[in-house]
Image (cartoon, rainbow, N blue to C red):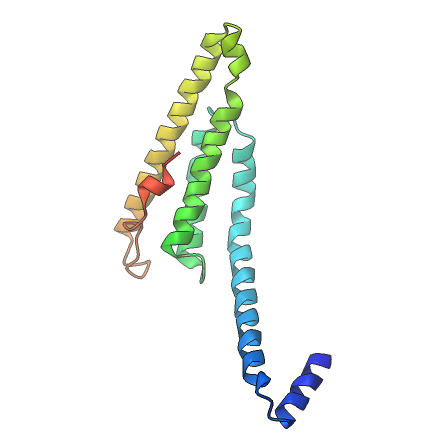
Length: 167
């Protein structure tokens, strides 16, 4: 009410600040609308990503299809979170978490203490998780390409795989 009163006074005075105020107000409202929409969609990733954050490398491949299916839904239906930059950033975060899972599972102390076999098995499971991530991404990308007409002609062809899988 206080802001509306001030706006009324500015309108009555034909203030030069009124246009800037309306522009900023519109930008804030648009930003709020975008944030609410992004939260609504990204919240769906919370549970699968929480599971990923606590997974061992051997458990990771089983979690990836759900994560990528959720990302695909976000990309397909979100009004604001379907740009190439945002999608690449989201996929890069999944890649980074896979790296974190491998790093947390491999104990340098065990390797230095001579327990090489346990670390080797963990490293092999980590490599398998990385291969599974690339394969799951490839299958999802192919499915999107096959269904691109239903997605308004959009597909993941423009995604920068080097940026996604750099780690």
